[in-house]
Length: 402
Image (cartoon, rainbow, N blue to C red; front, side, top):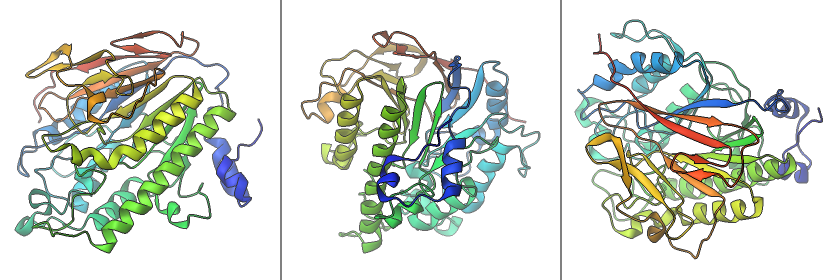
């Protein structure tokens, strides 16, 4: 197999041999076989209504067992938020989630099995960008209010081995090793990864929801102006994300991939009860996704969390069908009450795009079973299928926590 050199790095002519080998190993060696790939997707989990509410945390081992027991699943994706905005930010809590996922001991939690599949995780706002806010900074409860320090905790714990997944090793490209040397701060983004499987290119980007791409001013109470550390964070991460998306689509074109999957946390169309300006800072990502998807010409699926309610739609086509869960009834689905297109209009008409918001946060935990069937008609589309993708909500009553 010909070694892969990511296009932007090739232009710079500075890719080291070790990095090239790592990138090549990230490709699906059985890609030509192109069998059905089943993926468990979840996010906004575990959640608590307060720092003292550990019900979902204690139920997580049983939740992991339900995914492990599925004979089809071979990969797990977490779209961000490992605790709620009502719980404090600490390094110790982050470590406890990592231990649950990997099967390491967790104090007070018996028989944590750990996932038996590779886990790819992208951070959410509750892990870092919102840690300065009152409920998460903790005060006397010992929370850390510094967003950048909390992001460092996440990186040190979940991304300590760049280019490799959590729980079970699967090589991936990490932006920390595959970046354009003209932008050296891109090397910080170890959480941004790319991999290729079953003819599909997958890409993750650190785009936090809730805080409008980190535009909510840091501080408690919130100051009138952003600090230089915050403005630098927004500038560096936004640029790194956009360049990483460029690389993913360049790879998809070069490898004649049948589809692209984008994994991020923010629901970039969700008003979240705030004025429209609160979603304004996502426009550059939406524009880039729309442009790349149009140029690619094949199915592109976006997976995100953040707004907690399951949703299946195409927010890049005006008037496109939309399905969501009914409030108070996870098992029922209904037409969406709002129109995501209206929240971010820009004259888009990108019909080879689809988006799924993964359910999260509520007491009954849930995951999405996403199937990739190579060779399926690219024109196929329904409330639970799109191109080579089909999915099912896995809603289960979990046993009481021990």
